[in-house]
Length: 480
Ligand SMILES: Cc1ncc(COP(=O)(O)O)c(C=O)c1O
Image (cartoon, rainbow, N blue to C red; front, top):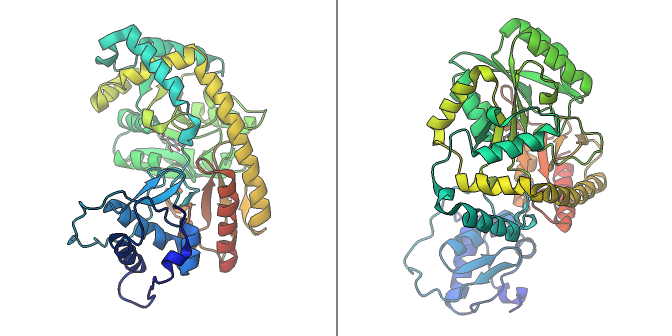
């Protein structure tokens, strides 16, 4: 059944009422459904159009729809919209609507094609891109081959054949490693955590880039480490700042993302990679290289990971498969320097005994049968289109004094807003108009900055990139 705004002309919302607008809308839509004015199967109006019709924010409609869904009045279908539920006889008529403080949802847990919002915050792959059929076939192959052994406890270091196939695959990209020095982990976040636990003591110094990945900041702080942030320039870490602080603080660890840094998208020049390696050697510091996305590079001149320059087993190379496959698999690996391999293994064992053996066996076949390589080539093609489309939309819809550095790849772009524009207000205004963005401040370990936003194109369609960028552009213009 098609929706029609004629059905909603009698909706009345009082903006100066004590009752929140979304509660008023919820209550009136409930009444419509209970009275049968909206029959089962009725397709509710799309969020943004309904919001425009009612002259309210899209976020208000989202909240009302969410409550209706939670209480069984409607259901939503990914990508197609929200419908009146078939039967609502089990709904407790007396149950009052819980009014919570409305929070901006965690973008990573939002349904990626949540028809309610344009999610320009998540940097996880669009689930529609992953071939579920292929994964099913591989799982069947693993189960036919390994039977119940696929479910037994796995070695803490990881399924040996997977370590072999990882070593073979990554040797080609210059990461010289062997099955004995590969440690399989349940996601890169676990990798950062176990490195922190194995290497750091209370009060130790850790250097990070500024800005950097917040999950790493939290992991280091949870060990009682002190974070010293190093300035980041367009071609990588600021070597002068690094050297000055190395002399002053003598850190145990330097945490970096030399390829397509999160959040800035910056990639280090070869000169800066060499200087960083030289300084780490001179001051005898370990480097944790977080490679969360370098496979998704759209430029031909991609540099090999920093690990390829490592002559004295100083770089711990951390590779996540979350961003280019599915984060829910929880699969990554790191290379272990010999001097503290035993410690790392011990911490991994304490943490979760081992990463899921079934997942490891499936992923091993992905690498051995070349399915992984094919998947990579396909998603690169898809995201290159999204990336270029995003660049065009930026040129068209964002004010000229919003700055960004064009990244070599990845799934997002980092922006510096004009001096007088607050990132927090832009994120809020965009949210009210149906667009989710990431605010820059959590990426700063110490002094925060309210001047940055990160915009992602990972889970949205091309039309949504245009619509989202228009909304962001307008939001910035209103604040200029
Ligand atoms: C830079 C960086 N490192 C690590 C992670 C964690 O990845 P995983 O899902 O493999 O734990 C993320 C997730 O967003 C990330 O952006």
